[in-house]
Image 1 (spheres, rainbow, N blue to C red):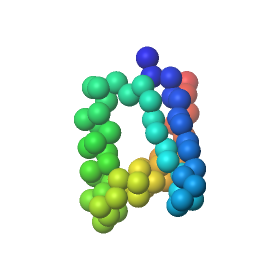
Image 2: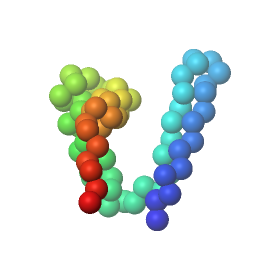
Image 3: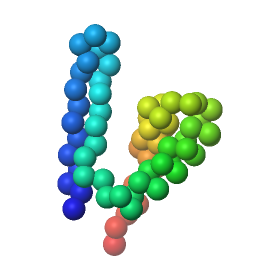
Image 4: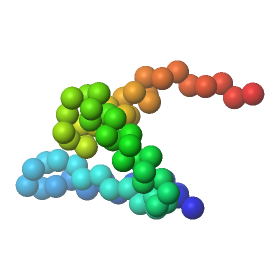
Length: 68
C-alpha cells in the first residue's frame, strides 16, 4: 500500500530541491503521466516540474469537499 512517504534533498551545487516519491502502484502511473501531460499542455510548458507545481496549485485552490 502506498504510504505517502516523500524524500526531499537539497542539491548543494544548484540549491534546488530534489523531490522523490515512493510506493506508487504501477496502475497509477497512467493517471500520473496523463495529469502531467495535461498540465504541461494547459500550462504551456515542457517541464514536468512546472507541470507538477501547476497540478498542486490547482488542487490547493479547489475548495475542500465536505464529508457527510
